[in-house]
Image (cartoon, rainbow, N blue to C red):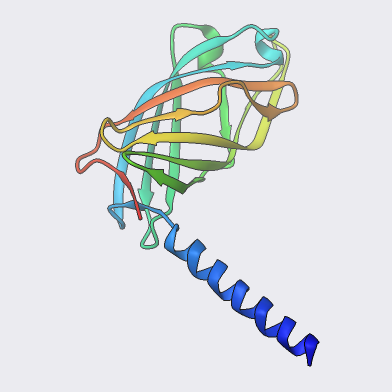
Length: 174
């Protein structure tokens, strides 16, 4: 009888925890929309001899019907010669919201990666990796938080800051 009471208690606890986690679920809105974002990123890799290189970056993507975003194209450019060499890998990258507190949210971008073939510079094979990000609903700014996130194979995403330029602005919503 004692084991039956324990089983019932554990079942009730599991149901309550499941309901609580569903209540805290967040997503990206508006669903079934497209977006663009542009800004800059700074990376260190074998190709840069572990020196930080800052490049311009542009993302284009979609938000599916369940509130998960796909970054379908990534364009890197800039005046540094290394900004012209990356081959983006793993697209689409998936952006999933995880928390919302006031107007700020957090999430993860999965499958992030790029390669730079070896020729003049040493080769780099960075990723796939998951990057933790934060998002401001008011300004539309997405940043890598914390700084200096590993991308594997001696590669580091030192910083990322992009601003969503699509209207309506993307939002992390409960």
